[in-house]
Amino acid sequence: MAAIAIGALAGAWGGSEIGKSLDKADRAYAERTAQNGLEYAQVDQAQAWRNPDSGNSGTFTPTRTYQSSDRQNCREFETTIYVDGKQETGTGRACRSPDGTWQIVQ
Image (cartoon, rainbow, N blue to C red; front, side, top):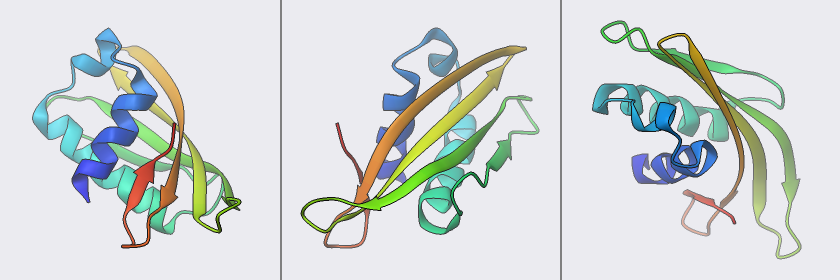
């Protein structure tokens, strides 16, 4: 499932310089938070992460839950990262595939 979250967050941050500066541990914290947010958080319920080693942090917030025309459960989300006092915010959409994983929708 971590690969699904990587896609979600990479798409939301759009390859920004801030997003590129996250290390492997930062990404692991962010990925875990995104996956939990997609799976369990209510709309507008922010999920926060922080890497105590780097000091980098972020949030993942589902903003809408709906069913697509082909009856897939989907969620729109907003994600924000904070690196060295700079903030980057992105948005995205993910839908649950038949095998139960979340897939980013373009």
